[in-house]
Image (cartoon, rainbow, N blue to C red):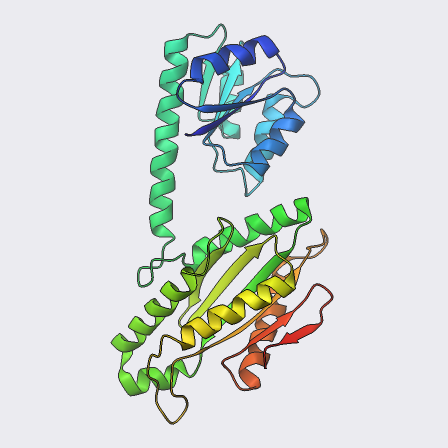
Length: 305
């Protein structure tokens, strides 16, 4: 069921809107703009109904904040107002609102406008998802990864939970392509993406094709020791596919894995920890490949072999 957030300081008017929409949607009410901002950033809503006139932070200010945040800027916002003058309507639309609903509420108009904008939101989301999927493997592409990683990084900062960045690289892949050909190389990339994906069971586990024979994973909420053990199983699972390699370098196709687990500080960027993950991958390849090298929360290296 699609989720709608109503931000309105009037319990009576919020309840009226909820009653109109409750039979078709999962509706949550926030009675302050501050609570509305927090909820919109923390949960997945398909639409926000936002009152313009509220004490403290008003609806226009909240709308501006929602549009500035990566996490919330794609959520459609319908403004609720009794201010029917053109100047205020123009201001809301310029700030990013998709529509207006005026008081007193007409239930048929409210439902029609809400249904229309949720359908449009879902169409956009589907088109965007298709544009963010790697065609060879069916997993996320780099564009999707870049958006997802920053969103989850900010979420981990806010919640102060462990955040893990993982880099995978297929060992001696150029030699594989030179030996077996690029179509065979593409099949290897797809097989490894499928194998890694089969080990990802939580909704917050994320895998993307970073480029060429490289993959990147994001994991939230688990300590480094558990992630390290999990990745060792994934590495072994790939080796156990028993995809023949050029015997001059390896019997089977394998991967090297490097990464880091951190409880992200507010004053550090995601990019700085991505560089550390890449360094761990480099160490895994430099010390023999087909292994996991990890940096824990204290920046202490963990070696599989």
